[in-house]
Length: 126
Image 1 (spheres, helix red, strand yellow):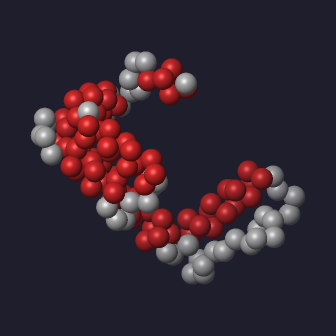
Image 2 (cartoon, rainbow, N blue to C red):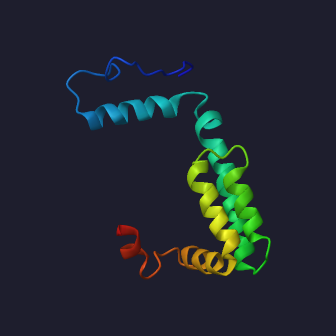
């Protein structure tokens, strides 16, 4: 596409006439995805963060005590902007104060079959 896509502040951006909000969402999603800078600005750094989280998961699975340091690095170091520091810091404080509970929670969450752990669904609804 070769051009920067910008939004307006005066309501929804221009798009083909007569479309639903979903159609406009898909239209703009496609425009952003076609943008030459999309991977560089919207995807690559997320894959970097995901790789760091994968390292923490692997270390936890291998029983390495460094898993929590790796997790901390994954969610606090640049380029992570996926989690807000206001939520991340109390969470990491809890992990460090309760390392055994944190380990058990992440072992349950990062299980081998990637299923939702028993009891988590109801807990998350509360």
